[in-house]
Image (tube, rainbow, N blue to C red; front, side, top):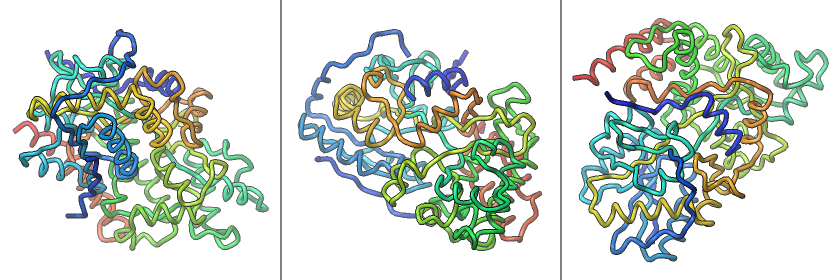
Length: 456
């Protein structure tokens, strides 16, 4: 019987988050186009004549991976190539690259659904330093006794807010709240957002929320990350961790948070199809909006745009569910490293050695923890390599006060096609060309049909 330990348990996430809370070249593919063993920190062996090709999923860490690969090549002589897929194109890029003679030796899947697609390419990682230093099997994709993928970063997302602007709002006469802590349910969030929108000229902003851009660089925030909330609550209510037939129990809650976003933003709902992730990031950095749905990975961009740690806070995304006052931020991983078992043997060994160096060397651990801001599930990061910044600290504080984190259920979403269908329906609804029923159809019927198609 297959045993798939892919969906991270809430308990482990809480413990993990608190505990852990060239030839090198970087090429951006253009649009559109665990174990009980002790930690091992010895220097990895150099892997002969082999080479490494990493297809990176995260554009926001592209430069750091480039620099880290260069350092490794300088130290070992082993060529490391890092290619970064453009936002929203990773699966298509991976398919294309895997057909080439020099296919990636290191790639990633997003969880159990992604593993189904790439299962035949995944090397068993059980006999690697990566697995030996993993804190728990709950951070691994294990099937038929084989370790086929290992999470390398635990992340958190919610509503990032500009503390300075929110403080300015709370100082206004008649402000709905006097403390950010009072925003602990949808009704309060709605009241605050709508009051900010109504008083935006007085506050000096363009909207309560940044634009909900629905191009490929931004739509994942809503068709995947925001959609996680209704899926999470349905799973929680039904006592399950996945399903082939979603019921859509909480789609009206999904609708009300989406309505709140698009009707209290820096732009009119009709134009969000042309808005990008860069637009939202810029609006937030320039102080044009108070709230910005994104995650801990956005920290570096916020700081690079001139914000400071004192400017940044993060709240849970509330959708109007009973008892949500105790709900926390969304915490989990959809980033599982896999080694291509079809690569040349010498390249497989080179890739193992590179990953060992990444998680055990000072250079590698500093890059992941301090430069990329990763909270990792590896024991080797416990001593002196725990990432800290305003957003990570907000996540830790949210756990410390006893809030229940929302687990990432979107790795169980049936396919990228399903997400695209939901995203298209959300956009048409925002533009006024379709009713909300189109979103419900894409969500429920699309879920069933995509799971059925995966079985064929």
